[in-house]
Structure formats: structure tokens, C-alpha cells
Length: 212
Ligand SMILES: C[S@@+](CC[C@H](N)C(=O)[O-])C[C@H]1O[C@@H](n2cnc3c(N)ncnc32)[C@H](O)[C@@H]1O
Image (cartoon, rainbow, N blue to C red; front, side, top):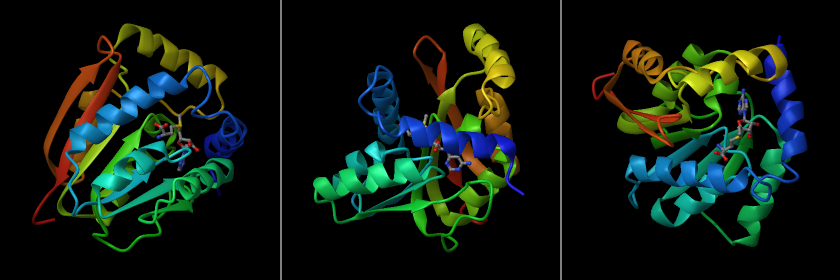
């Protein structure tokens, strides 16, 4: 049965999909996406997966830099917007799929060389299962960047408590160290992090073990 927070997230983001990339949060979210893609160091051979892709802005931005880019998201509204925007830009190497990251991802083992996930991980109801799936669909040596609010920042810590109580779709922000620990436990290597926005936001970067 679906987690109630996931059901709430679908409703919340379906509504937001109508104004996403155009409202007051758009600039801030865009800066984070740009920095996350830069941290991946994309190249023309890469096959990119964006988990919790929203309206597909990172997929469209990455498209000219990679062989293929795929966006995956829970919200039918977000996916519809993503497809429409990519079509209007005549992008031929992008595609979008709808689904929940808490279950098995609909991709073969080792399909991707890079995975990005921006400002979405705190909605994921089964984060350890999602990390395991990231490892499965990533090719050995593939790179991953998870970017989200940093629970170690005092304001984010308070916000997290408030959102856990008040926002039905909120699962929880993680500290970079917690996320790094989870990634190491799942067999990722070269795990590191950096922060931006006065340490309120963190990028955790990792690579899939060559032997895994
Ligand atoms: C704040 S938006 C971020 C979108 C995009 N990554 C960005 O940076 O603009 C969070 C996205 O995560 C998606 N999401 C939330 N829970 C999800 C889940 N369980 N599986 C897949 N996507 C999910 C939402 O539908 C939403 O589009």
C-alpha cells in the first residue's frame, strides 16, 4: 500500500505543476539544479537519470551535454509539463516516466552513468530502498549527486520539525553525514559533500563501486 506521505506529495505537486518554474521559488530552485548538474561533470557519453524531476528543467538543461536524459517523477501533472516543455524545445534525446521512487525503478540494471536528485529526497518515504535502486540502475563507476536542504543547519532543523508536523508530504531532511553513511552502506564509494547558501543546502556526491 502507498505511504500516505507519497499520496499527499502527488496531490501537492500536481497542484504546483501549474506554476512551477514561474513562481517565486523558481529562481532559487534553478540555482540549485544548475549547481547539482555542474557537480556531476557531465559529458557527451553520459546517460542521465533525474529522480523527482518536476517539470524537467534539469533534464532539458542537461540534454545538449549528454547522450540521453531521463526524468522520473511521481506527479502526473509534473510529468505532463515536463513532456510538453521538452517537446516545445524540440529535444530528441530526453524522455520522462511517471512513478514512485519507493518501489523498483522501471529501468534495467546499469542503465545510467549519472543520477541527479534535487530538492526531492526529503519526500521519499523509503530512502534506503531508493538509494539501493539508485545503485542498481547506475553503471559501475557511475556518479550520483543528491542535493537537498541540510538538516545540520539550525534553521533547516527547525523547518524540518515544523514540516514533519504540518506538511503531509514531508518525510524529513537528512544531514549530509547521514546520507553519506547510507550511501557507503549501500556500496557507494568516493562519497563527499559540500554546502551552499550559507550551509543551508547540501550536495552529496558519490560513485558506484566498480566491483559492485
Ligand atoms: C520540489 S520538487 C523538485 C523538482 C526538481 N528536482 C527541481 O529541482 O526543480 C520535488 C519533486 O519530487 C517529486 N517526488 C516527490 N515524491 C516522490 C516520489 N516518491 N517518487 C518520485 N518523485 C517524487 C515531486 O512530484 C516533485 O516533482
